[in-house]
Length: 233
Image 1 (cartoon, one colour):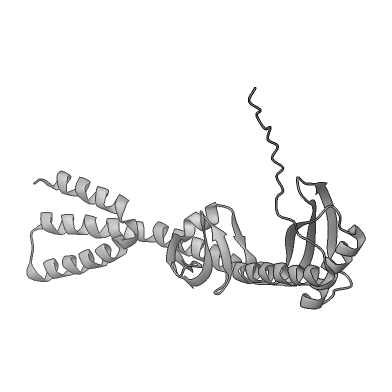
Image 2 (image 1 turned 45 degrees about the horizontal axis):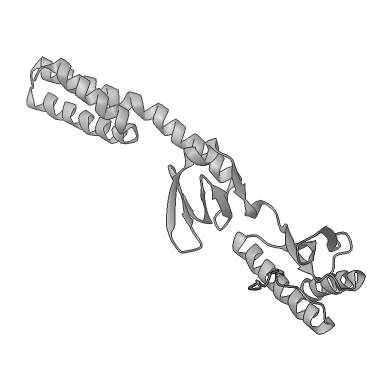
């Protein structure tokens, strides 16, 4: 195998594993020193020197890129934040020079390159201390609508407290097939998506309990079936 073929093969290796080239460069430098001490031929020294130079030459750009992505991720994401990115969501468990590790709700670990995180939109629930939760529901057509609104708002305020500057919002939205639909929005302290889901679950249970106590019905879908009887002549 001639020297040109060897260098071409090394070039392909560098393009695939550029981050590890620094170690190759350091190793080749040691080889050069060893060859000098052992009185190697000039051609051998030249080959080893070129390989070492390539390793050190690639060290700067690759290390700079990894450091830049690492710094960008650390600026926007902290340990313990719950984020959504690149089709995955989970709690940030580790941020290193190359990757960020997430623990999903089902306890799986996802490793995402920092480059992909910074080059794609991502949602970080840890950047805000308060999250607005929305509940959609409906009441029966024979319900007293002002009373249903009052009961629903009271259930949320009783469970999560009141905030004068952030009151609970309640709006009837449409006449549904079997119920008059409404949405209810309110603010809560939540740093993780899991917390937001737990808040929504607690809110649904509180509204259902208050409706039951007040005699307000959340109806099932209603279907009316008409059939014609056939009469034999």
